[in-house]
Length: 117
Image (cartoon, rainbow, N blue to C red; front, side, top):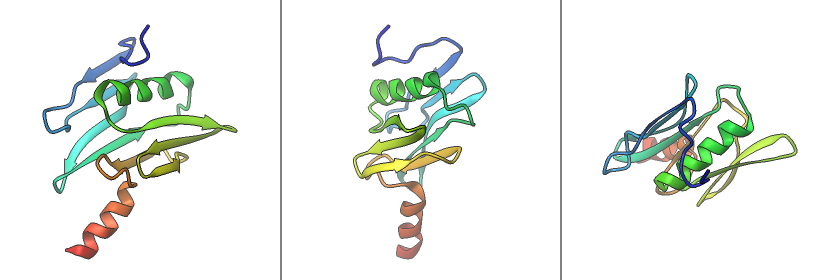
């Protein structure tokens, strides 16, 4: 099995549209990876739904590789982390969202977007 392509076992996959949005990777009943366009920015949302297993993590990383989403998920000392071009962030809450272009966490992007408006 290739680790650059998403395993289809119990998994629904919708490839991104031309603009990068519309990507969905659903494992069992959870959309573990989703991309959306929000205020002309590409938002990537990761969701483990409490299932912090190796398969969830592997499928997230496979989606990142197959669709060039610019992140990686890893674990150290029982803590999950997301690596983007902007840095490494703890992934302790159920969801972690970030801007695909800057790699910044989505809550930071929204904060600066609101201040600029």
